[in-house]
Length: 498
Image (cartoon, helix red, strand yellow):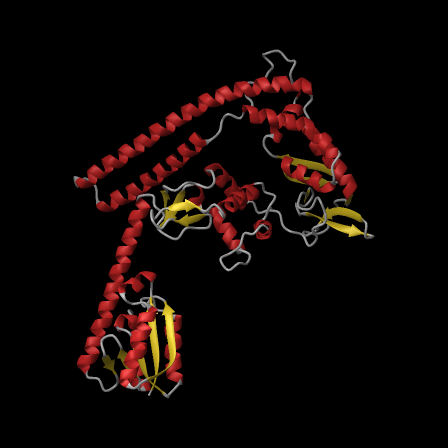
């Protein structure tokens, strides 16, 4: 008599409980030999018997229905067969409509169309018991995972950039992948890189999916949207403050969210040999500026005309490079006479910001303590019966969310580096050197300088209109406003510095 053997585990933990696939297979073969059954096909699977869509189980059912010569099917015990009613009915159909006999090798029980009502009743009870046991495990697991979340422990598999520490059950930073996560946020936040550009760049640098291929664009997007990387995580639609080390700052995370909302993100063109691609938009219609090669040697930039002909002019690449130098780079050049005044301004702002930061931290801590006290009083009101359980849960969730937001703000503020005096001086020194550097380098490096200085630039009838990045936008304002220049008396000097 030809038979099938179906053996299953739903987790590695079950192997420790005597349900390993090898142990089930040995019991199945021994049982078949004793009963004179010939096993012609074996299913060795790892899947839950609770869910209703079981691919391997359904494959076995269809195989048994198609092959009339198969008379028997061997399982280890009842809960290795199924823990849900839908699959139980599929087994009953095999028995009653296809004349199959079900065997359980561990207990020696059999069930076929000649079995009495008591046997069917006992099988129903065993399936119901398996289902109840599975539901209890699921409930306890969910409760345990919720408790972990309340304690700040991420209760699931580590996302890219982290690894699960099996001994401490905590998240640890993955030294191999975390640098890619940081760079993804940094590159995307500049506004110069699309998701696809980051994905392709990382692939060249060795960043792979678990299967060794390029990661999906959705994976890159999920990384950029996941709060776990700045120290929080979402569980059951609620944000929790994690006790793991953040990979990026909250400030950088928020900057990436702003870029995600910007629909006018860069894209990869069909050619990669044009230096100033993805740097310009049309000042007349808002479309992108594309590039093309004419007579195999002249590169021109022009509107894509996606919205129709707008009349904007074509511009040669050499002329465009010169315009970038004169109309963008040169505008941030600071002569030496201004440098000392800027140095003094930075020093004064540094002292003011330091005091302002201390005041903000103090205010946030006071607000945090108020929320904490409210939660305590709310809990006491619940215990004393002054408020309902439902009202307490609602307010506890609201105040808890507010506490997390305050904690993130405090961590971000306390971790921020307000000692930018030296960094500011280096920026202004760079603004003195950048134009000579731009003039004496090639197109590719010129384009990199433009990307450093601007977040967007439009062109209208051969005139550039740049949008400068910080702090270069402030430098341009200083240099373009006569009343902000040194040499004025104290009443004319600006009272605030950006």
